[in-house]
Length: 224
Image (cartoon, rainbow, N blue to C red):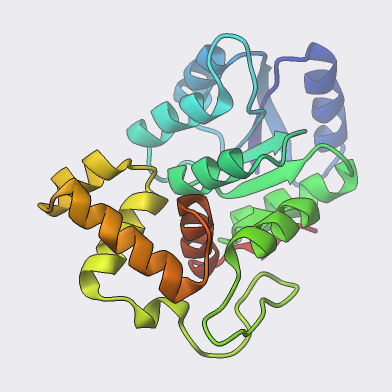
């Protein structure tokens, strides 16, 4: 697979390039140290996978990923970062990222990239645990399995009305109440009422948990 690397730390870029290039099935086609450069590199090389940091001084990895995915929705972007921040995870999954890894065990990176190439989405163990805590509460109390799939056949969203599901999709896409109201042709007050009902039915506390529950239900597996 052809892999591009993005990180604001040149030492990390070089280290990742050495580690990944040692794999027989990986060719590193470029490494850059900023979000704007990442967009340019993707347009130039069209890598199979782009491994990208989130926090960068010029343009964040999330914003760079949005620009890349707007141009090419099939792009495979895997975030590699030190931050398991809940909002970052939600935004990354809402954008359509194929993975979210933490800079801990470099041995998991190559297997994770192979999983992405095979069509899977991957989350590193710590991130998967955060998703489980925030968004995996199930109607009726069923739990999430260790591989990220739901335990049991019950669908927590089956208790929601069609309009509530529409609101859930808007939240998962990162829209605020005003944007959801405009897209769904309903008042902001109605959106707020739907959100209150969704939280009650799913036994969740906030919209972040709603978004994570939605993306987890879409099927996100563990890295490594």
